[in-house]
Every structure is written in C-alpha cells, then in structure tokens.
Length: 103
Image (cartoon, rainbow, N blue to C red; front, side, top):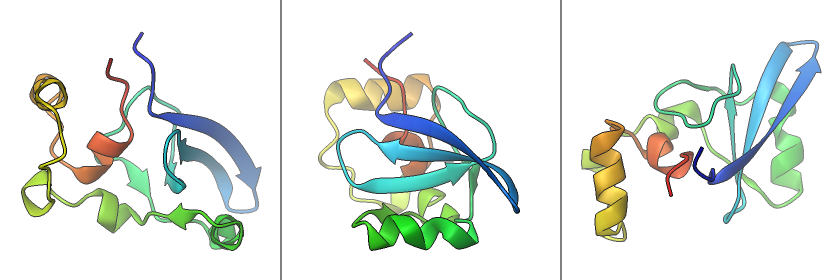
C-alpha cells in the first residue's frame, strides 16, 4: 500500500461515528463516514464539535469545498506524477487530491 497524505481517527459521539481526516502536511481537517486509504467524493459535513479543530488552529474543510471539481481549482502545482495518479485513480475533486494514498 502507498503512503497516505493523511492520518485518521474514529470519534464516536452523540451524533454517531465520524472518521476524522487530518492532512499530514497541512493543518487541514475533513470528515468521512468510513475509514479508507483514499477518498474521492465521500466527505461529510463537519459535525457540531468540529469547532474544536478550528480553535486549535486547524482549517476544517467543508464537504462542499472538498467536492469542488478539479476543473474549478488551480492545479498548476501538481507534478506530472501526481497527474498520472489523478488519471489512474479517476480523481475528479479537490478532496480526492488532498486525501490520497499515492507514492
């Protein structure tokens, strides 16, 4: 398996179970229903307690922002290798690029 660009934790609370995704290189946090090695479009809206991450200096990314099509994002910083992975894994969203398991 390839190294992931994020770490995960499962939090169980009154609202149910959430998988927290913490980017490995940037202070970005996202939420998903299940733990996976990479994500495409299956992000959740931040739960009510997500403000704890914001208070600690993280940026909580909304499911809408993560679902932004790559055609609407400045992708000029992606390398040739990253573009190959985008095409190979059929990634079409910002979230898919940010939370991946490519080499």
